[in-house]
Length: 215
Image (cartoon, rainbow, N blue to C red; front, top):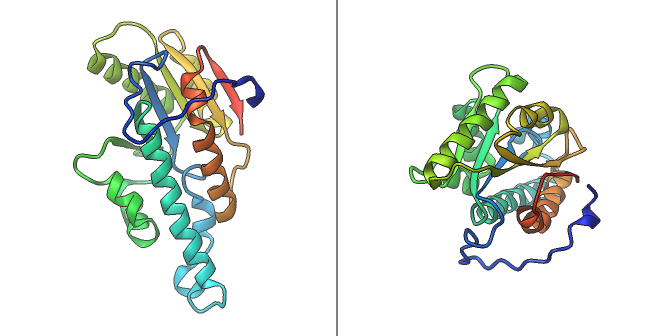
């Protein structure tokens, strides 16, 4: 389905409770690697060395913007449903990364009462692992909400990550996918993509029925 098919315009205020108006109880799952965070790009630079470069102030400003945009997107998503982040990295690695360059995001993810659930793979994740994550999300959400009907699961990542996994749980979820085409975004690309995702998130959440949207 193309973006033009999403026609409902919704205005969400920061303190609005959307749970009563959404068509389904919803869960939103973000990939961390090269989706929320330009992981490959970050691994390719050395911040200590970059500090000696003439453009370091631009990189530092962009990292602060990335931190702000990740936080804004996750908080926005939290008003629409339960939010999960899957990661191929360990929690210790993510904590170290956030302390170094994404402090506000780190405060959200690693706060003891955080509303965002982080799911880290113990080894190289497979499609089966992602399917197990989705099954666990469905079970937890259905139990928490006291329902025995399908829930909406919106998976945001690359096509190879979620295509098979969502199909395995499609009998009890309404599958929605936002597929990112850039596999290894640089810092400016990632910032721009996060803004695009936040701009369409309401329309996707309120869409009735399955959805496959390329962004």
